[in-house]
Image (cartoon, rainbow, N blue to C red; front, side):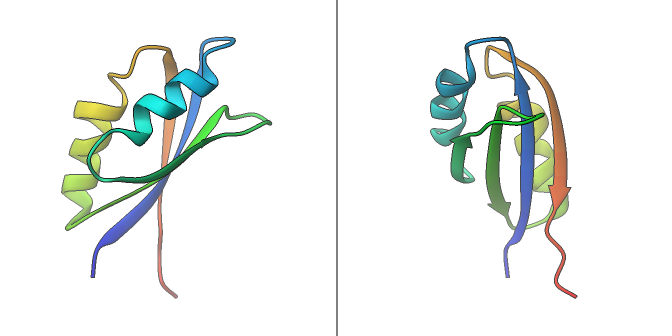
Length: 78
């Protein structure tokens, strides 16, 4: 079973839609939507392990221009 996480993203003012589109194009991203509230974009990602999710966030998602901060929330099955 794949490991999943939600990535909460804050962006520079006016760049949420652009950032959401760029994140959606990254391999491993299931969906990325621009939203309102304290975060500008919420993305759901998946991969074979927590380590690979971490690498995806650090190596690809955080490098998208316009992102100022991310918060990773792993999905747990209780």
